[in-house]
Image (cartoon, rainbow, N blue to C red):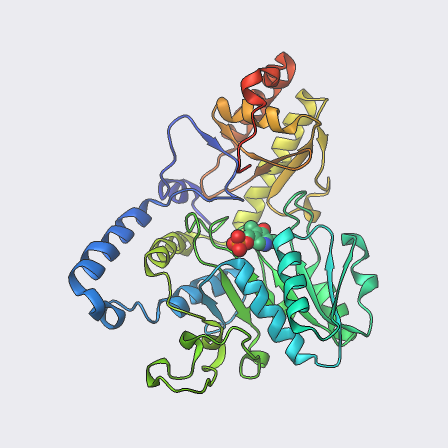
Length: 397
Ligand SMILES: *Cc1c(COP(=O)(O)O)cnc(C)c1O
């Protein structure tokens, strides 16, 4: 059983804050600052360039990847870390399209995060081979996987509503149609149990600064199913993905397996913070996280619906159909959230009218969830959100 008192003690939470935004930026793990300090002073400061070898900087992307592999049901040696998720989406899709040369359709859904769609369209335009990005409603995905689809590009948990796709079922439909399945696990990794192997996913990508608590701008991950790893063609053929980077060959030869999905020099300091953050997960069984997350989110929905009749649930009511977040609609979502944050309850908004709350049992208790709903109820009852200072929009929501 996961000891959630112990996991909570592994995080530095500011006094007086109830944090319901770990789905967007996870909380600072206590070990991260010391680890970054060590990397900067003892490794960079003292060892200088020697640290690439003797502090393990060069092998860090795969070592950290193995820690993530365990959380997403991937075998060791099938995940590597680096770059941003946008870049990893590009790599996965480019590799998938090269494995399905006769097909021209990429299928995604309108609930997908915009960068995934932008990156896909940009790649298809660059290829100039007549590929088409087909975007359907989330509930129409299965029926739209026709024989001309090269790859599906889907995010398992909808960033706005928390709606959960059935990864195994949709992957099966894709495979039956001869297509490959790429899964974006941005809101899944560290949020819900994931098993890319059992689901049969061909590629999976995700970020590490959300539920995995790697810190702002922490590098992303990519998983390539072992059956494709030796044949997947890296579209971003950087020197760190070369078979022998320090041979300095003029010609590119892809590295062994997942190593070929590395691009350039790894972000060593960011990786140090991420590695420390991932050590917390050694204490964790994802099934316990799921059970606790559902308990917290069900309680929150019950409290909010009982006290805030003006808020409309925007997430699936069936807990089995949700990831680890809950959203409510309100026409004045922005000032409502601003008033909530002003009172120390931090969630976020997604345009145009979504109030979004993430549930992270590693450092969030049921008492806090109840208190957060109470603060929200007070704001709604008193219409405190009408205060002019809550109307001013900031750049990042
Ligand atoms: C958060 C998120 C991203 C962010 O991409 P970055 O390149 O890391 O900024 C991309 N896709 C999805 C589905 C996300 O939820």
